[in-house]
Image 1 (cartoon, one colour):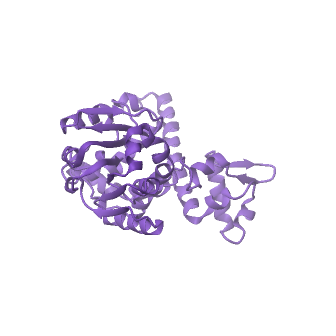
Image 2 (cartoon, helix red, strand yellow; image 1 turned 90 degrees about the vertical axis):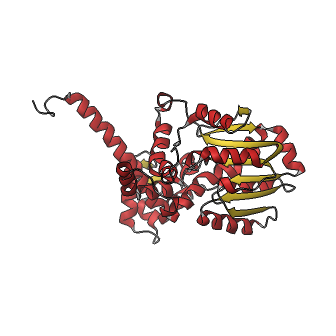
Amino acid sequence: MDAVSSVDRDKVWQFLERFTDLAAGAATVGVLAVADRAGLLAKMAETEWVTPLELAGGQFAPRYVEEILSALASAAVVDHDPDSGAFRLPAEHAAVLADPSSPYSMAGWLDMLPGVMDKIDAVAQATVTGGGVDLSSYDDRVVAGVDRANAPAIRILLTRRWLPAMPEVVKRLQDGISIADIGCGSGAAALAMATAYHASRVIGYDIDPRAIERARLQGKASGLDNVSFEVLTGEEIPGGFDLITTFDVIHDLADPEAVLVRIRDALNPGGTYLLMEPNVGASLEDNMHPRGTLLYGISVLYCLPQSLVSGGPGLGTAWGPVRAEQLCRKAGFTHFRRLDIDNPFSAFYEIRV
């Protein structure tokens, strides 16, 4: 009996439907990336009901516009009126896809996902031979996408909701303290804190010169004189800080334990470490949902290879709160408290010696 004749055909058809859903989702992200880069999403966010020809308006090729809108309508991204042939991007969907000031923005994933997909061959090779993929080999669009994905929520929520979960820290920030943001990327968190707390001094550190260059340009454009950026690893940061922050950084590191030990040593007496990591459960069974699928996927294609390329442990995005507390306590921290912040994607921890 061959393998095909022995399978349950109903289950085969069920999984074919499931795989079609997965492939459709990937194709939709690709179409959204095209619409985003062409400027179609931003244009649709400015209009109500519009036909493909009206939307094209001499700015876009009409046939592409028609097919893109058809793809997005079939994916329930845009609305379609069959009587008029018009389409609309609902305001609620625009808040996710086409509004850079929205805390709900996911538009950065339209840069990140195509960018990390470009490394499939390299990750596949590492899967066979071991090792990983160095951060510097990822396209600049991935760096920009990470910033674009994280910056809107950080700009809006960091100083309004996240830090206020630690009132005593906010009081010290207002009075003026020294802050280090490790793995600062393009500087969104450092700039947000420098903007909100003028008496405090903020330094952002990152190993990627491309990200630091972006951060410095944004810092210069802001006109702030209490923020700066340096290319430096977490193990190399100097001491003397009252607050140290990491936002979705520790799970990427080659030596997370060494960085946590350095953070402990770099804090002044009474200082605080704010750790933000993906909001996941302690086990795979706790993460069997679409957000978990997305996190495991980006872990395979981006986060895990960065750690493993340098011989790191490869914590992955779903390393979870139990292991986070274990590593922090092993590094010498005695206070580990999850903050009461309702966020579907991120978990926040107040950590002190």
